[in-house]
Image (cartoon, rainbow, N blue to C red; front, top):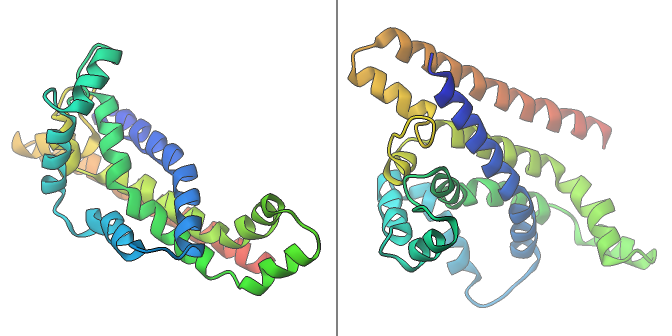
Length: 221
Protein backbone atom coordinates (compact mmCIF):
# COMPACT_ATOMS: atom_id res chain seq x y z
CA UNK A 1 0.00 0.00 0.00
CA UNK A 2 1.40 3.38 -1.03
CA UNK A 3 0.39 5.46 1.99
CA UNK A 4 2.24 8.53 0.72
CA UNK A 5 0.18 8.55 -2.47
CA UNK A 6 -3.04 8.02 -0.52
CA UNK A 7 -2.29 10.86 1.89
CA UNK A 8 -1.41 13.13 -1.04
CA UNK A 9 -4.71 12.25 -2.74
CA UNK A 10 -6.68 12.98 0.44
CA UNK A 11 -4.81 16.27 0.85
CA UNK A 12 -5.56 17.26 -2.74
CA UNK A 13 -9.23 16.30 -2.37
CA UNK A 14 -9.55 18.23 0.90
CA UNK A 15 -8.08 21.47 -0.44
CA UNK A 16 -9.97 21.20 -3.72
CA UNK A 17 -13.24 20.80 -1.82
CA UNK A 18 -12.38 23.57 0.64
CA UNK A 19 -11.60 26.05 -2.14
CA UNK A 20 -14.61 25.10 -4.26
CA UNK A 21 -17.12 25.32 -1.38
CA UNK A 22 -17.30 29.15 -1.26
CA UNK A 23 -16.67 29.49 -4.99
CA UNK A 24 -19.43 26.99 -5.75
CA UNK A 25 -21.98 28.61 -3.44
CA UNK A 26 -21.40 32.10 -4.85
CA UNK A 27 -21.34 30.94 -8.49
CA UNK A 28 -24.33 28.60 -8.08
CA UNK A 29 -26.45 31.28 -6.45
CA UNK A 30 -25.46 33.78 -9.15
CA UNK A 31 -26.42 31.46 -12.00
CA UNK A 32 -29.61 30.40 -10.23
CA UNK A 33 -31.03 33.89 -9.69
CA UNK A 34 -29.44 36.05 -12.38
CA UNK A 35 -30.56 36.42 -15.97
CA UNK A 36 -28.01 37.99 -18.33
CA UNK A 37 -26.84 37.85 -21.92
CA UNK A 38 -24.45 34.98 -22.49
CA UNK A 39 -25.60 32.99 -19.46
CA UNK A 40 -26.05 29.81 -21.49
CA UNK A 41 -22.55 30.19 -22.92
CA UNK A 42 -21.05 30.63 -19.43
CA UNK A 43 -22.87 27.56 -18.16
CA UNK A 44 -21.69 25.59 -21.18
CA UNK A 45 -18.08 26.61 -20.54
CA UNK A 46 -18.37 25.49 -16.92
CA UNK A 47 -19.73 22.14 -18.08
CA UNK A 48 -16.89 21.48 -20.57
CA UNK A 49 -14.87 19.35 -18.08
CA UNK A 50 -17.81 16.93 -17.93
CA UNK A 51 -17.54 15.99 -21.60
CA UNK A 52 -13.96 16.83 -22.51
CA UNK A 53 -11.49 13.91 -22.24
CA UNK A 54 -9.33 14.45 -19.13
CA UNK A 55 -6.13 14.18 -21.14
CA UNK A 56 -7.30 16.93 -23.49
CA UNK A 57 -8.17 19.23 -20.59
CA UNK A 58 -4.88 18.29 -18.96
CA UNK A 59 -3.02 19.23 -22.13
CA UNK A 60 -4.57 22.70 -22.24
CA UNK A 61 -3.93 23.22 -18.54
CA UNK A 62 -0.33 22.10 -19.00
CA UNK A 63 0.16 24.61 -21.82
CA UNK A 64 -1.59 27.46 -19.97
CA UNK A 65 0.36 26.87 -16.73
CA UNK A 66 3.71 25.87 -18.24
CA UNK A 67 6.96 27.76 -17.86
CA UNK A 68 6.43 29.65 -21.14
CA UNK A 69 2.94 30.86 -20.24
CA UNK A 70 2.13 34.14 -18.52
CA UNK A 71 0.59 32.32 -15.56
CA UNK A 72 3.56 29.99 -15.26
CA UNK A 73 6.10 32.81 -15.37
CA UNK A 74 4.14 34.86 -12.83
CA UNK A 75 3.85 31.95 -10.40
CA UNK A 76 7.52 31.01 -10.74
CA UNK A 77 8.59 34.60 -10.05
CA UNK A 78 6.63 34.50 -6.78
CA UNK A 79 7.03 30.91 -5.57
CA UNK A 80 10.45 30.17 -7.00
CA UNK A 81 9.35 26.94 -8.69
CA UNK A 82 7.23 26.00 -11.67
CA UNK A 83 3.48 25.66 -11.36
CA UNK A 84 3.29 22.43 -13.36
CA UNK A 85 4.69 19.22 -11.86
CA UNK A 86 4.01 20.57 -8.38
CA UNK A 87 1.25 20.18 -5.81
CA UNK A 88 0.19 23.80 -6.42
CA UNK A 89 -0.31 23.02 -10.09
CA UNK A 90 -2.29 19.89 -9.22
CA UNK A 91 -4.55 21.95 -6.97
CA UNK A 92 -5.22 24.57 -9.65
CA UNK A 93 -5.95 21.89 -12.24
CA UNK A 94 -8.17 19.98 -9.83
CA UNK A 95 -10.18 23.11 -8.99
CA UNK A 96 -10.79 23.85 -12.66
CA UNK A 97 -11.62 20.24 -13.48
CA UNK A 98 -14.12 19.96 -10.62
CA UNK A 99 -15.97 23.25 -11.18
CA UNK A 100 -19.06 21.63 -12.74
CA UNK A 101 -19.18 18.93 -10.05
CA UNK A 102 -19.29 21.65 -7.39
CA UNK A 103 -21.48 24.26 -9.07
CA UNK A 104 -24.19 22.31 -10.89
CA UNK A 105 -25.73 20.44 -7.89
CA UNK A 106 -25.69 23.64 -5.85
CA UNK A 107 -27.27 25.62 -8.67
CA UNK A 108 -30.12 23.12 -8.98
CA UNK A 109 -30.75 23.39 -5.23
CA UNK A 110 -30.90 27.18 -5.32
CA UNK A 111 -33.18 27.08 -8.37
CA UNK A 112 -35.57 24.75 -6.49
CA UNK A 113 -36.21 27.38 -3.80
CA UNK A 114 -39.60 29.01 -4.29
CA UNK A 115 -39.29 32.78 -4.89
CA UNK A 116 -42.32 33.30 -2.65
CA UNK A 117 -40.32 32.02 0.31
CA UNK A 118 -37.66 34.65 -0.27
CA UNK A 119 -40.30 37.32 -0.77
CA UNK A 120 -41.90 36.35 2.53
CA UNK A 121 -38.58 36.77 4.28
CA UNK A 122 -38.12 40.21 2.74
CA UNK A 123 -41.64 41.19 3.81
CA UNK A 124 -40.75 40.21 7.38
CA UNK A 125 -37.95 42.77 7.30
CA UNK A 126 -35.07 40.33 6.83
CA UNK A 127 -31.98 41.73 5.13
CA UNK A 128 -30.63 40.03 1.98
CA UNK A 129 -27.75 38.62 4.00
CA UNK A 130 -30.16 37.28 6.65
CA UNK A 131 -32.33 35.71 3.95
CA UNK A 132 -29.27 34.05 2.47
CA UNK A 133 -28.09 32.62 5.79
CA UNK A 134 -31.47 31.71 7.29
CA UNK A 135 -33.47 30.62 4.25
CA UNK A 136 -31.39 30.00 1.13
CA UNK A 137 -28.48 28.09 2.65
CA UNK A 138 -30.62 25.69 4.75
CA UNK A 139 -32.91 24.93 1.79
CA UNK A 140 -29.97 24.46 -0.60
CA UNK A 141 -27.98 22.40 1.91
CA UNK A 142 -28.66 18.95 0.35
CA UNK A 143 -27.27 20.14 -2.99
CA UNK A 144 -24.26 21.71 -1.31
CA UNK A 145 -23.46 18.50 0.58
CA UNK A 146 -23.87 16.40 -2.57
CA UNK A 147 -21.62 18.75 -4.53
CA UNK A 148 -18.86 18.64 -1.93
CA UNK A 149 -19.00 14.86 -1.60
CA UNK A 150 -18.89 14.39 -5.37
CA UNK A 151 -16.00 16.84 -5.65
CA UNK A 152 -14.04 15.06 -2.92
CA UNK A 153 -14.61 11.58 -4.33
CA UNK A 154 -13.98 12.66 -7.92
CA UNK A 155 -10.70 14.34 -7.00
CA UNK A 156 -9.35 11.25 -5.25
CA UNK A 157 -9.95 9.07 -8.29
CA UNK A 158 -8.86 11.49 -11.01
CA UNK A 159 -6.11 10.21 -13.27
CA UNK A 160 -5.80 11.95 -16.68
CA UNK A 161 -5.58 15.59 -15.61
CA UNK A 162 -3.36 14.75 -12.64
CA UNK A 163 -0.92 12.78 -14.79
CA UNK A 164 -0.74 15.48 -17.48
CA UNK A 165 -0.23 18.42 -15.11
CA UNK A 166 1.66 16.77 -12.26
CA UNK A 167 3.39 13.73 -13.68
CA UNK A 168 4.31 11.08 -11.14
CA UNK A 169 6.68 12.65 -8.63
CA UNK A 170 6.65 10.63 -5.36
CA UNK A 171 5.48 12.72 -2.41
CA UNK A 172 4.67 15.70 -4.65
CA UNK A 173 2.28 14.77 -7.46
CA UNK A 174 1.99 10.98 -7.38
CA UNK A 175 -1.60 10.35 -6.30
CA UNK A 176 -3.20 7.02 -5.44
CA UNK A 177 -4.72 6.69 -8.94
CA UNK A 178 -1.29 7.10 -10.56
CA UNK A 179 0.22 4.70 -8.01
CA UNK A 180 -2.34 2.06 -9.06
CA UNK A 181 -1.41 2.57 -12.70
CA UNK A 182 2.30 2.27 -11.92
CA UNK A 183 1.72 -0.97 -9.97
CA UNK A 184 -0.26 -2.42 -12.86
CA UNK A 185 2.54 -1.47 -15.26
CA UNK A 186 4.91 -3.36 -12.98
CA UNK A 187 2.50 -6.37 -12.89
CA UNK A 188 2.10 -5.93 -9.14
CA UNK A 189 -1.54 -6.95 -9.05
CA UNK A 190 -1.61 -7.45 -5.29
CA UNK A 191 -0.73 -3.87 -4.37
CA UNK A 192 -2.80 -2.47 -7.24
CA UNK A 193 -5.81 -4.46 -6.04
CA UNK A 194 -5.29 -3.30 -2.44
CA UNK A 195 -5.14 0.36 -3.41
CA UNK A 196 -8.14 -0.04 -5.73
CA UNK A 197 -10.12 -1.53 -2.85
CA UNK A 198 -9.23 1.46 -0.67
CA UNK A 199 -10.48 3.85 -3.36
CA UNK A 200 -13.68 1.84 -3.70
CA UNK A 201 -14.24 2.00 0.06
CA UNK A 202 -13.65 5.76 0.18
CA UNK A 203 -16.05 6.33 -2.73
CA UNK A 204 -18.79 4.21 -1.14
CA UNK A 205 -18.29 5.90 2.22
CA UNK A 206 -18.50 9.36 0.63
CA UNK A 207 -21.73 8.51 -1.18
CA UNK A 208 -23.20 6.98 2.00
CA UNK A 209 -22.39 10.16 3.94
CA UNK A 210 -24.10 12.27 1.28
CA UNK A 211 -27.27 10.16 1.32
CA UNK A 212 -27.36 10.02 5.11
CA UNK A 213 -26.87 13.77 5.52
CA UNK A 214 -29.42 14.80 2.92
CA UNK A 215 -31.85 12.15 4.19
CA UNK A 216 -31.74 13.39 7.77
CA UNK A 217 -32.09 16.96 6.58
CA UNK A 218 -35.10 16.07 4.45
CA UNK A 219 -36.84 14.49 7.47
CA UNK A 220 -36.27 17.57 9.62
CA UNK A 221 -37.76 19.95 7.06
